[in-house]
Length: 199
Image (cartoon, rainbow, N blue to C red; front, side, top):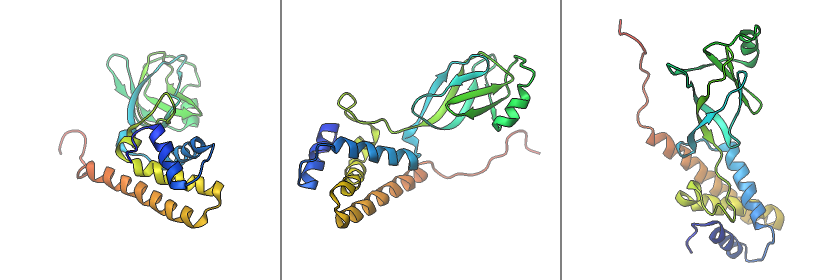
């Protein structure tokens, strides 16, 4: 049985569980919540423009982790991360200027000195949730086994199927570990390279 869509995943879960559960979609959502706490791989990397006002802008709703923060002024400039307390001291005077620094506070990205110019944000996003209207995503397309065994693991807590639950959980953890390993290998050899003129 092919598992390429939200509907096909639900059907497969019903077959594997050999019973009719009315809340199969809950088990899928619980697996997605687990993945978003554990997985950070290249297919999750994307960009967004953050609109700024008074040096602050709202992060995308699917934000997990920043990769690069670039001020979109002229010339563009990659900003340096600082702690919220340090940024507060930078912005203590309320002066507007071309920013040098940024921080993350809750669901907001803040820069200092203050600026209203937009920010280009390279970041890791959550795995897009499956639904009736969003029938697939990159994880289901590339790794349907992760969705199947991860959702079965969540369902096992409701059905009190401890034996299968342990087996499905082990498969899920192995698959997620393999995704990490595959992502690491696809990045190629990593080496430190000095920036600036060679002495």
